[in-house]
Length: 468
Ligand code: GLA
Image (cartoon, rainbow, N blue to C red; front, side):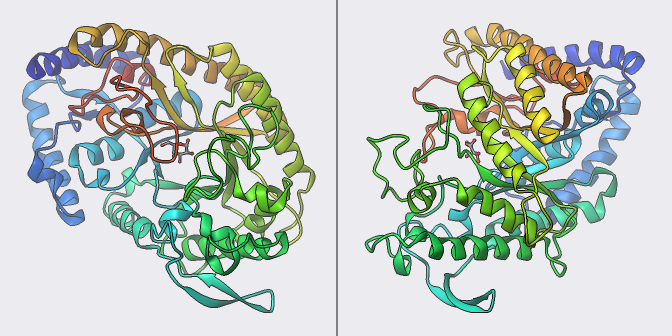
């Protein structure tokens, strides 16, 4: 079955690549999407680069001998030509050490978002139920007690990227930081006296010091003047998902009343809101990000269900509130763009809702990025080969409409779309394959095929939508 699939994918590739060579002018790359063997997956950073380099040499020879059977366009070049924007994907955990994934990332994308590594729970060393220890820090002339941080997980990925960029300047990757302030994946103890979740919540004034300290620590560590990583980041999600799905206004501590607020990492309820009882933490997060970020670092608000009318209205109010406080670093806020997550489905939203939403956000903040694009399967798909072909075709058509909506918004003059990022690379690693431990994901056992590349690292029909 695999052999057949690979062959038919190649046949499509040959026809389309030939057509594209005439019509699009976007670059081609040779078969870098070959499946990884288990031993390849275990390769180290250095070995990965070396293997890739060796593979490139071999492939050039093979291509010379066998015409352009393996040639496929590099999506980042095609998207740059059509939309004039970055093209990204999320990577997390060991995925970059799966050589099939790494080849896809470095061939087709110029931007990456770390799926988990820069979130608060990771930066507190995944010490989720208990504070990992404290130390003293200076903040605005005052000594405060702060939790110990652990930057090792993002640094592992960043070191791989730095090394890659040094040796492959033509295929350099940039990073979209994700995320500073979020109700989810932030340990509950962070909001309590002595960082002990059995003790009472701290006051708003105390929490605001923690907020400023946390943003300062993260930004100084990764994009401060002395950071080896400073040039690799181009932007950062300052606040994620602060608007309710249900009420069209801010997410509070009762977004899901049946869920305890004391849950370690929070699925839906916001301890930020619980402590502040207002959107002040959002405004202050943008103020502190502006204070500590270099002025070239883009700053974003990011949310999902962003095309639903009620939620869109709430997000627009939030963006307006952040904009209303714009000012110099140390004084006011700064926001560069709205991040539309783009967790869409075969069932919707419609392309008109996407176009309208991008334009509406553009009217407030100027720029929009699609930050976590993927597509839930239709109910007809059961994960088997029998239902796959039809599902792939539905998915191709839907992605086509979505891409058309983004082009149309881009050409309208109401918004500048500066990036499109997929939430993953190959279907098998998508978060939609299993239920996420912090809410969301797949609530059923239904198979999913949300991304551009299949489980064998081959481009799916929807790949060609973005290769136009
Ligand atoms: C949200 C978050 C992401 C990620 C996805 C699911 O959209 O912004 O960081 O957790 O959910 O994987």
